[in-house]
Image (cartoon, rainbow, N blue to C red):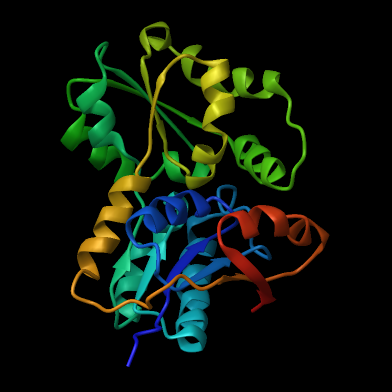
Length: 263
């Protein structure tokens, strides 16, 4: 019998599509369920207590409904706050997403790294530990931007975004002491990879994220498993269906998600 259990990707919005895209390159025939907590979006401005309560409960419902072989929390904010709780609650592999500070430190020449994430992510002790362990000889600057999350969502809805907004957001890093020597930026929100071309046009830095590493981890954890012989259209699940979600349909289809449903 063919194993049709899906990979379940979870994010507050469409940011996790950047992780899904990297995963599909390694596992093109994997059945996919992509879940977005549109009713709870955005996570980056919520409190730790809200996210710690919301994410495990939602993933419990999603796992019960879709019976995945593996869960991917394709969201830095949810991972840095709730990954441990989710792993303790679910009896299946859970892959998280954390800021790619280690690879950024490996490529930085000036030893000044920027961590661009949500407000909730950049204040987490987890980020402190990553910086201390992997970038101890670097100046690590941080900036939180809810606006950049919204810009990524708007781009995928087909809206035109303002180039000046990306330059202004990057100044949140470069205007800090030592920011004039910045050469590497960690995209510490999965949404931000979706607007990397716009960021690159606004600031000529090396941009680093964890999507490929997460994809390799997923492939490793499923390497002995069977997959369907050919890819099937994936399902996108939203906790609230509204006009903004419906406007995402063409972009979702481009990522192989042809069916949109409400949880």
